[in-house]
Length: 145
Image 1 (spheres, rainbow, N blue to C red):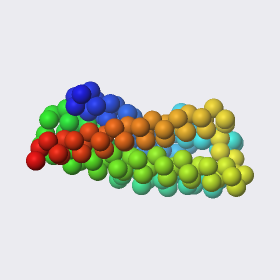
Image 2 (cartoon, rainbow, N blue to C red):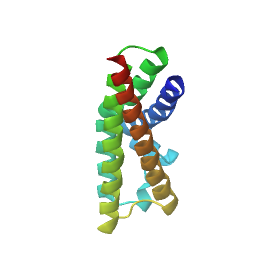
Image 3 (tube, rainbow, N blue to C red):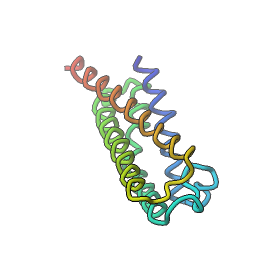
Image 4 (spheres, rainbow, N blue to C red):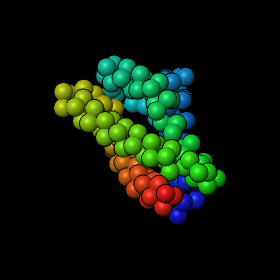
């Protein structure tokens, strides 16, 4: 289970981190790739918010893929780093979902319907992964005592 979960964290977390790296370096390229909302289908406030969020995510979202590497290597610090990464991912998923719902409630253009669905689905996947990682990390900490 530990190896499989580690790889999920590396692949999913690494993909998300790469998307935010692309968004930070070249936001318009990220929009063309579909990792960010298209300019013509979204309000400038949303675009600015997403661009600034991408910068912060370079610091905050690195922990889950790093934890996945530690899990695969069976490094003794994996439970602690995984717990940190899981908590950050749970917070990020919830915060992004609520931010997008509040923007939609205020009538901001949020991108195409299909993009909105993909982004909401990604927040749900992030939250599920986060909860699994948190529970597994706590059990790893418990059994390492």
